[in-house]
Length: 106
Image 1 (tube, helix red, strand yellow):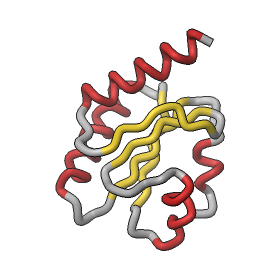
Image 2 (cartoon, helix red, strand yellow):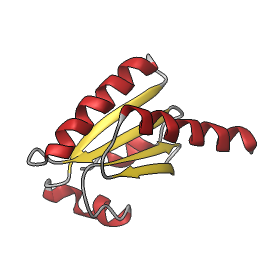
Image 3 (spheres, one colour):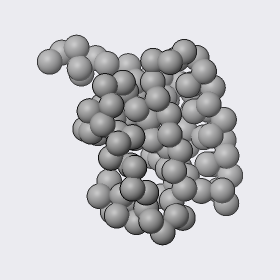
Image 4 (tube, one colour):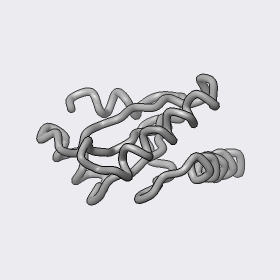
């Protein structure tokens, strides 16, 4: 994916969901991230990428993505947090709270 760097180099908090279509946990994660994005009302950007896309291999290696689902939180190209494994609405809110608390502490 040639535009991956453009996706994560944003002022807004950007979530990148790494998943695959052959994964039940990924399907549940997609529903949870969609609900989360809707609740955020434009506070975050959400992008989904398929880990089976061969063009993504360098991205998967760079960010050490070994399983799906995984959601990484970015701002200005920097990884701020990640969730790997079962992803729930509550875990997304908790991760965002940690990101925002860390940013405000700086």
